[in-house]
Amino acid sequence: MAGGARSLTDAARRYADAGELRLAGHLAELAVQAAPQDTAPHAVRAEINQARAEAESSLMARGIFSWAAAESRRLSGGDGPAQGPAAGLLGTGNQ
Image (cartoon, rainbow, N blue to C red):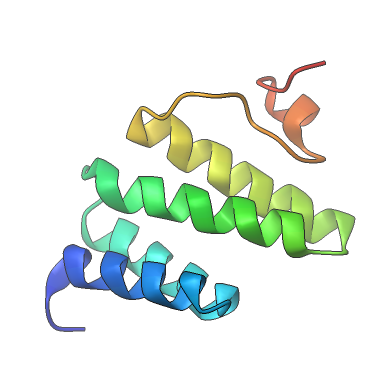
């Protein structure tokens, strides 16, 4: 994908805004892989994975997306506790 991590991050946001969370998640993941030290792709990945966790009916999928969101929040310096069904497992939930 031409344009690097910034282009991928912007595309991920556009698809997420359009309700295409699955594609947005893939693009956000590619952005993080393209620039693993950049906090902006991690922030977008956290938002999208949190939205995916909230939209899922499967407990396993919610746990995976919640973990990915928490990991990106940690790497982006984002604040706020992890939420969702896996919050207790992550050790950062509000119990």
